[in-house]
Length: 159
Ligand code: ADP
Image (cartoon, rainbow, N blue to C red; front, side, top):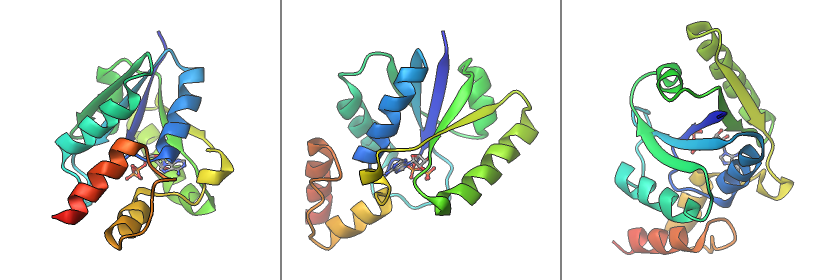
């Protein structure tokens, strides 16, 4: 069974993330979406909220699991018997950081492969960051996120 790990912050999950997930599911038998707990970021949604949203939007896919991890990604990949990490590449601006991270991970474990997938071009400008900001300012993000996420954003911004 070929397992891939799709790590990220997913604050919140967007249609861009789903696009990458669907592509990964064509290449692997199983994809584990995993929230990195120890990021320096200060997320809008708690870990539990992000996991719940990811589970809801992926429940109709077979062979998807949602999890979270702490510590080194390479160790998590080994523990889950995965053969690869999946990351999305939107634009050249993603490239430098992603290349550095992939090569650092390979230094930590030379067997670790990272696969980069390109989303449909309509998602190349889409990021959780912009979605959070537009929603906070009262803009319409219904084209960018699944309906449950839209609802969750509205709830957050009411508070
Ligand atoms: P991180 O904080 O690790 O960047 P994100 O949740 O922002 O985590 O993203 C997780 C992964 O999904 C990253 O590889 C990112 O490049 C990718 N991704 C995010 N948004 C998009 C998008 N619109 N199209 C393609 N890939 C995306």
